[in-house]
Length: 368
Image (cartoon, rainbow, N blue to C red; front, side, top):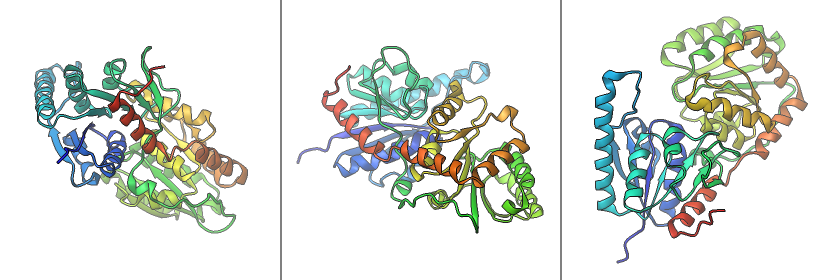
C-alpha cells in the first residue's frame, strides 16, 4: 500500500498562529495527506479544532528573554530539547514538506528541515515578519504573506496568499451589510484571546457619552477578562445598555455576522475574519506588540479604507464615542467601510496557501 505523503505543521503560542494552521490541516487531510502538528503547551489549547486524525507532538518550548537572565538556562535547555524532539519526529515520520506558522515550535522544525534538506515554507500572519520567520525567511522555499506588502529581509521569496481563517468562520453564510435606521444596533468588542483590559475601561466611557437615541438602540457584545466581567456588566447596567459580556465567545462567527460595528485589537486573525464578514471596523492595536506588528497591521487595513485606526496611547472616551456615532449614524461612512472590508477579504486564502505548499513540496516554485 502506498504511504500517504506527510505534511508537518509547526505552530505555537496563540490563536493567531494556530487558526491558519488549523485551516491548512483540514485542507491537506481532504487531499489524503497525513498531517503532523508540532506545537507547544499554549498552542495545544487550540488543537481540539484540528482534524482528530492528526498526529500531535506537544513541546515544552520557551523564548529567550535576555532581560530575565535567571530563566535563560532553562530556556536554552527547552530549545535544545525541542530540537532533539523535532529531529526524532522527522526521522520517524519523514515529512515531505514542513510549514512553520511562527512561535517557537517553528524554530526547531524549520531548523531540522534545513539540516535534513526537507522542503520548507513559512506563513506570516502579520504585516511584518515575526522573530522566528525572520531568522529563516531567506532559506525556505517561500514566505506566504497575509498582508501586502509585508516587511521582510531583502532576498526573501514572498507570495501573497492571505490569512486562512477557521472552518467555523469560513463556513458561515455571508449576509450583505445593512445599517438599519430603526431597531437594534449590534456593537461588538473583542480584545484578543484574553480580552483587553483597556477596552473594559474606555468603551463604557465612550458609550456613556453617546446620544441617548443611540444608546437606546445598542446591544453590546464584549469580550473581557474574567476579573473585569462583573464590573463591566454593572457599568453597562447603570448606563442602561443591553449587554452580553464573556471572556471567550464560542459562537464568534454568529456575533461577527450580525454586527453593525466591531471594535478590536489589530491581530491578524481578527482582521481576516472581520474583513470576511464585511463589517465596519475600529482598530486599536496593542501599543507595544513585537516588531510593532499590530500597529503596522492596522495601518495597512486603514490605508485600504477598510477600517479606522486609533492609537490607544492618545485615545479618550470622548474620541471613541465620536467615532462610534460617526459610523452608526452615517449610512455612507458605514457602508463604505463595509464595502472596503469585503473587497479586501481573502476568502480563498486557504486554497492559495494549499497550492503554494504543494508547489514548494514538488519543487515547482519559481523564485522570481
